[in-house]
Image 1 (spheres, rainbow, N blue to C red):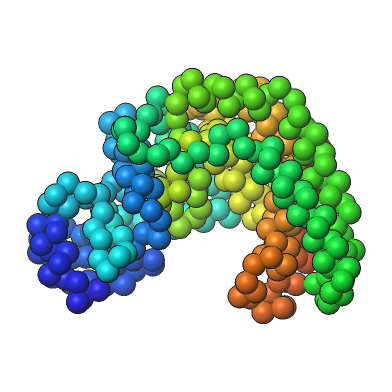
Image 2 (cartoon, helix red, strand yellow):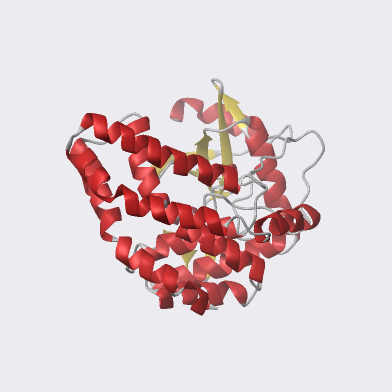
Length: 328
């Protein structure tokens, strides 16, 4: 990035003394403090939407987000060689460890605060709103169909991965069918309607690298995939990530739910939809989909190992779902 130093300085009205690679971007030492430069692999509209979201969160008191610094001409991004870059504050924190109970609780509390602060959000005119609101049944049905379709591929190919897939696929299909049946109730449409009336956003990429912890402060970054969606999408993904670190221990899920609900109570409709979402064999579908339908960037043994790990979690997952209603 050194070759673009002068361009960045002019665009943002800063003086840069050093540029150091860090994670997915660069730390800039400037005359106005440390800042973080990152190439955003998303559209201009996505950045503008994320900018509006973050400004709204800050205006509602949720200030530990990576707001964009504006260029001299008022843009939250800089275009260099047909690529979009953003500059945000540099948070000198460590990435969240979902295996650590305290980190998981801090992530849950921050998530509930984020969701609370996002209520009523509406983007400025002229910005397209990314939205998955109302699409969950269609999305899960599509993944269910893909699991069945991949079974036919496995029957044709008959490699090591295929044999493992064929040996276990029926029980994961049963989980998917139960999930879809639960989702047929009135709860999901009511949640969609409620979200449309109240407003609010979903982070949609609430992963460890976007949750930075320093002392008692939790910083949230990586808003480029935020969108209009029911808030429990984020909460379900947080629980999934924690469960895979603790053999689907119900007490650990209860810990996360209690931390979240102290700030934002979880409704009965949300509990019902959460149950359906957590029931679906998401990781099983993802591993198989990557193996059969995506470019195979992993070597064979890595795919096989990932599938074996998912299969090894099956009994714990089923036990967890039987105890789900007792978590509240």
